[in-house]
Length: 280
Length: 282
Ligand SMILES: Nc1ncnc2c1ncn2[C@@H]1O[C@H](COP(=O)(O)OP(=O)(O)OP(=O)(O)O)[C@@H](O)[C@H]1O
Ligand SMILES: [Mg+2]
Image (cartoon, rainbow over all chains, first blue to last red; front, side, top):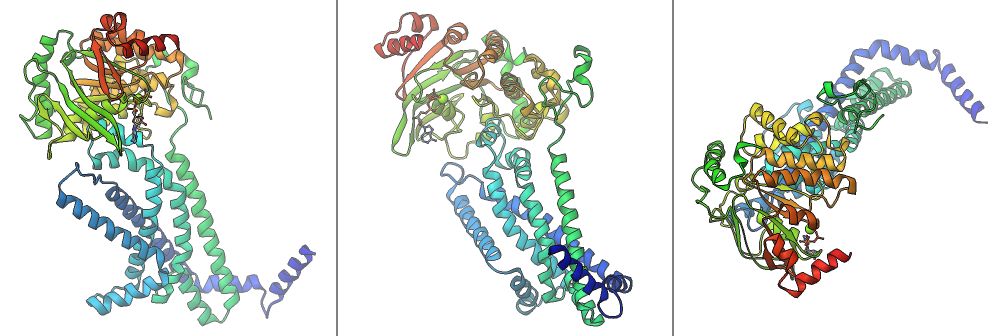
């Protein structure tokens, strides 16, 4: 039943028009590959920049929101400023998580021009929008990631006299980054797909390029099939690469004892089980 | 043992100013905490701490002299940890004073981070930095808080790690160590800061029985070397062996204190007696 349906569809595709489906796709690729390549480049640039800047924004907000605000850790003025900053950050997060990125793109692109006379080119506007949008999501992800770090870590850092910033930088945020890596990878993959909405301001990302090619060639179906396939390859590859990265960040399972002279040969065997290290 | 931890209290106080001078120069501040002769390193006066409406510490007057080893004992929930954490301000006291060489550290504008450099802390749950290896655990505080150069910090770290027998493990991450090994690294981390005094909060309570010994023997050696220590512990035999003074905390106050021989053999208060017998029984 299923197989015959698939076979039928393939037959239809293959018999479509004068050329077969795959031949049409091949022709599109051959003719428009520079356009597609540019689309892939812009999409990946948007997604990667958005994610990296978003992580930066998220970590910075996380570090700011955890600054102690109790009565004894600073004067009244400091506390008022911190409260104000926290309120502004909360508004930023709510607004950018609570509105569609497509609308944000329009507001930023046309709004900056009308209000301040700043006319960005569409790529820069796209980079800006995807970065601050991702930043809002990352801020919430980072908050969860910081909460997942054992409070004992912060206490130990305080106990050796480290400042809030030193504690964040050397102890809490590195562990936070490890905690949020899966969710961040997810954001990256979402960005690859969702930057397609930036075509509303004319950013030449992959979907926009597809739309243009379809408009010129009239080969709507094969073009969008091709675009879909490219998106799939991008997201799939990204997912795999991130998983590798995750494993690498965890570091080796084993360690080597520093004084080889006192250690039996077997303990130092590469990849072998060490005294206290867990074996793979 | 390091030069700063000589067994003779006299020698210790003679040596400390030089060490502190370094720390002060590094932190770009001076004169605020010059040690006063033979006075206590840390002192609390009428220290009180409330959590909400619950008053946990009800006025604690306490002092640690240079070179002194003080054990703090008492029933579970009596406020021992809270007291220790109030000393290095991991908990902020509700009222009273915490004096460091006579200066109230609760005053507005006092540099709390710099104060904490002079007081090491060893936790029940070890709290080693999970993202750092053993060596980095002992280096990071020196570099980020005390402004010690990386090279010197590393030398010091290795020195103290070998003192606790953990030098071969410099590359290991905390998750690769046993409980006893973690606690020894935690002690080396605290020592690497070259503190004037070390605070221990039940350093062996989270350990499997067979690892208690290795940690207690390290602490015992430190006590012998003349390091100033305040140790919250349920290990009565250990407290009796290493302490110069034992403090019995009950219901948020110091109920009784004295040399271990006196307090353990001849407790004055009925509640001290009751606690000690209950302890021996169970
Ligand atoms: N952050 C907190 N918020 C509210 N109550 C707290 C807090 N920390 C401690 N307490 C309470 O204060 C009391 C004393 O706690 P503390 O940990 O100081 O006791 P302890 O003497 O160290 O006990 P143990 O021997 O079990 O470690 C307990 O009743 C505890 O529930
Ligand atoms: Mg306790």
